[in-house]
Amino acid sequence: NVPGILPQARYAETTHQNYWWYGFRYDPKHFNGATREQFAKAVKAEGIGISNYSVAINREPFLEANLSSRGYQRIYSKERLDRYRKENQCPHNDEVAATNLGFGHPTLGGPRKDMDDIVEAFSKVQKYSDALVS
Image (cartoon, rainbow, N blue to C red):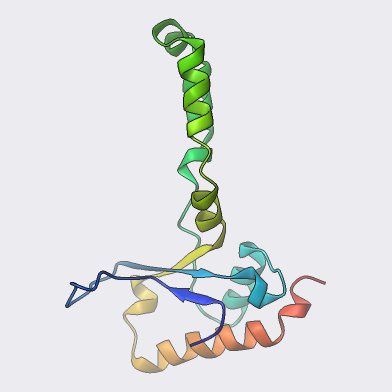
């Protein structure tokens, strides 16, 4: 229940969940505008194994490389390629990728105290978040 930490949602129909990686989002507004990298570095400094696993796939360089390739330009019209570029703009996905972090199974496999330590680390990082961005 740390403000600005948004746990990974699960479907209401789910009765059991098994994670190899547990994702969550953080809201920079609750952490003085800290970037994902600043937030993650501070959490790691508290001894919590945290990682950035998500990337904005729609921003990966291979997409533009393919769209600009001679092969694609031979197969698809300029209008279609331009339409794909426009449709590939995904602001919500960009936001999710910029604020998504998670824990791998080594972190999740520990005792309850480990989970309490995670909450404590989040609370501490939030309390001192002004130092992250100065």
